[in-house]
Length: 394
Ligand SMILES: *Cc1c(COP(=O)(O)O)cnc(C)c1O
Image (cartoon, rainbow, N blue to C red; front, side, top):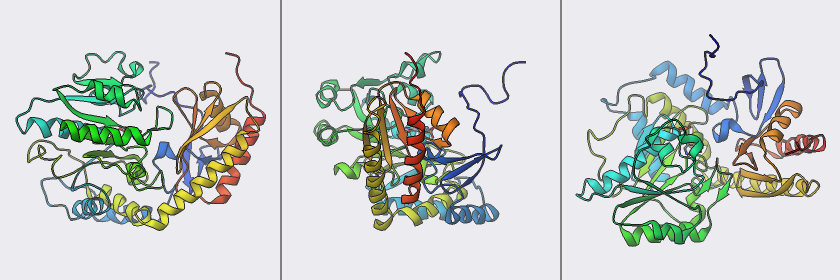
């Protein structure tokens, strides 16, 4: 047999973490790496955060899982906090980001179809990433994710990201919703323009269609706002959240206004594990830490410092880097050539973890509770990595 016990769908590298301490990961062989990837925007309080760890430990010992057939004091508490701190009136808990987007797609269709309309089509944007289920790969135009999985789910129309005129032209009598990441993550840390986000909201209102946001990566304080749409002064009808929401405990959430959730009545949707007490303990612990002005202000301040430090540094290497974009602690450093080799070099030779995005973007996604000493170490490692990197001949 040549297949590996772990189904070989990931190109796994030789770094094999077995322990985490704050912003550091320690591998099987004892080597340490500064984790400015955070499990791809998941470990938003670093590794082993005492408050989150304790909440999960205590809940695990008390009650881990019960069916959604029973009342859920833990779920009600966290859902109420989400309702109190966001645009939403109601929340469905999932186990992942893709499932949160699935729920959002179903809710958008049901919004129309429960009221007697046939509308089903969802307008999405090129280079988006919404997850790996059949519906969520269908929602993305990226053919590399489609290959071998046809037929796709019907009813998605792809328009250029940040192209308001294109979005407007794509609307027809079947349009149910727009689905968009306010800041594309996998697509290369691309923030939508203010005009685009406000324009989508206006088009949605004008045409009776829903604005659905995928904030799986950019949400939960990552940008220095609890959710990224607050940067634009635009509120969605439905929003998918996940990644940072459990700080490493896997779960997600689909948030909606009362009106947008009108189709999601008893029996229309479900999940065995969704919103179980253990996940809710993690979510409540995360909200204890992040959902306050002081923490969000810290993310904005430290994010601005990190960005300034990167901008100053990349000036020394114009042959390698072209710029920085993003918000808060969701930053993308654009490069002159494909980024994957440089990400591997930083990891293997300098103990620094970052993530590639798109073709030419180095994603910098540190834990949100870093301080200036982490920025200094990051810049040291990045400098050393840039100094001894040989740009591969293309
Ligand atoms: C990661 C991600 C998803 C998918 O989340 P999973 O937990 O991997 O299913 C969906 N949308 C965006 C924007 C993401 O970054």
